[in-house]
Length: 402
Image 1 (spheres, rainbow, N blue to C red):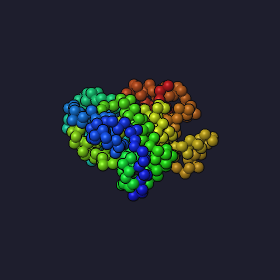
Image 2 (image 1 turned 90 degrees about the vertical axis):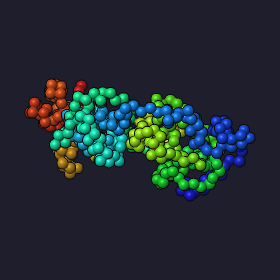
Image 3 (image 1 turned 180 degrees about the vertical axis):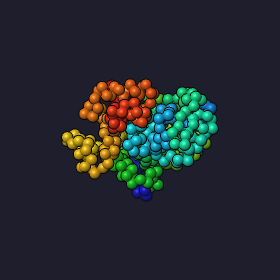
Image 4 (image 1 turned 135 degrees about the vertical axis):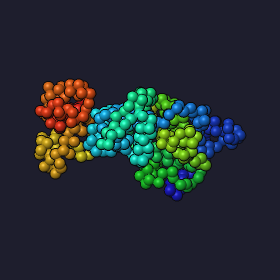
């Protein structure tokens, strides 16, 4: 990696990576030498033909995701709220919106999404009479837009738990596969697919810990990759997206533009399909014990502590017995910021009780008013329940109906 010497190829002839497919297609039976690890993976999915993918009318995954988010936020938030969700903004408002409107799967899917791309989609939706945006930035969906949103397929992202870390997993896996491919081909040096020093150091340790020179690692990793791809419920085209992004000896991975052109879709849609596939793959790996190597590659990728760092600090002080006012003084933050932290606690900490702040009867009134007015807008609820503070209203909405 990075110009470093690759390990010597094993002296003995190996057929441990199911080379039969490779040999049958590319070599005579006498040439029993495994040239590329990644090629075998791609042969596993050879029957998946990118040309056979059929795109339905207006099948842009990005547009469908936007429609679903807009439907959930309909009449409740500004158009920018959807953008902040996709970008994974860590503000108190966005974090609370995730819980209030059940937007967990979309969180942080596109951290580099240009605002111009988002605005172009909004403009298109307005031209189609799917939604209207007011001068204040608030929006509402029109009948046709709601119908379109209802027609969108379900997606299975897990943005809330991965938050872009799926790319760390794939960077590790890609460099492992590339390293094994070059090692098998007896090529001592190569340009690593990932130039991130953290990724390179992690992969170097992984390979050394698993004694990759002995040749057993290749077979086990191939078996796990083959098995997990068979088991995850995604289309053949989506599986192929993952495989064709991998690189090996004399076998470069495809660029996003190449994949998008072949699939007859935008680069953004190809990337979203790739992310959804990785989320499913990672969840399969996390939930089963059949993939010890892949589980190790996925180490630290899934977010376990869902609170922001600042909210965790507030939670620790609260557990020590400090009041909201005292925490404000200790942390030297605005009371509204500390209240944001408590709302976050109410939303994402199952054992956190809002009892010290609002009674059960008061909480019932909030939910009755929310149903009556068909809204979660604080201003409307506060006008109906003037005896409750905005903080109390937010706590009740964040905790959810009991």
